[in-house]
Amino acid sequence: MIDSIHERIHAIRSKLPDSVRLIAVTKTVTSEVIRSAYDAGIRDFGENRIQEVISKQNDLQDLTDIKWHFIGHLQSNKAKKALQHFSWIHSVDNLKLAQRLHNLAAELGVTPLVCLQVKILPDPSKSGWHIPELMTDLPALNQCKNLQVQGLMTITPRGLNDPQTLDVFNRTRKLAVEIQSQNWSHMQMEQLSMGMSSDYHLAIQAGATMVRLGTILFGERAS
Ligand SMILES: *Cc1c(COP(=O)(O)O)cnc(C)c1O
Image (tube, rainbow, N blue to C red; front, side):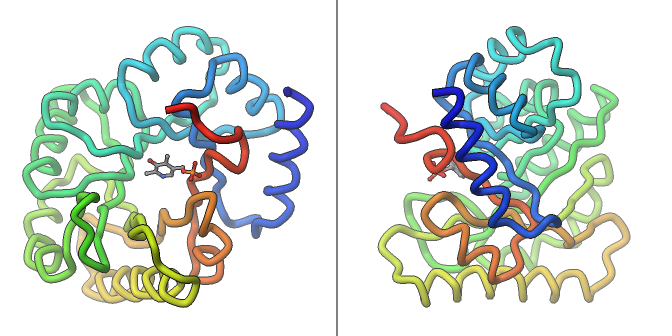
């Protein structure tokens, strides 16, 4: 089990450009397995449940250079806990949440790294900004100065073929370039968090800087 995780991590790592950050998505994965991924060189871990991450962080206290990435839909009543337990939040998906995180970040004295989650195509099962609404909200987002906005995150809808998936990723990159060209004083658009086990190869083609991989590293999740 442990050997195969090392092998899988090395196999995937060898396919990724050095500039791409591999985020190991460890929801439902045990602390012991996370430790073995750490031993294989992984330092970035993605989780989507706060309670689950708290107990894992407790088990892994000695691994002080882990960066935890929140990748799930964040309910506003969990915003404070998210700031306390994660250095990155990839899934900031509406202005109210951004403003709440900004205010809480001041209280807590933190400056979280965040991505803005966008929906390039309509997808009722996913949260995130549609492009026109995001463009409207940019001035208010730029005022959320305690957030270090780093770029965009997207999840492709189910059922797309490869060209359609690649198109979604390319459009996400172009959107980031467009926003970057507006020269916001407090937002950067250099990071593109896109690509999961089934489509990361396309995300890389389109310029992803962070891929979020679970199944391909740890096997199918039970739940
Ligand atoms: C679960 C999850 C992943 C990882 O998905 P796999 O298909 O297992 O690689 C990536 N991103 C988000 C937002 C997720 O919820």
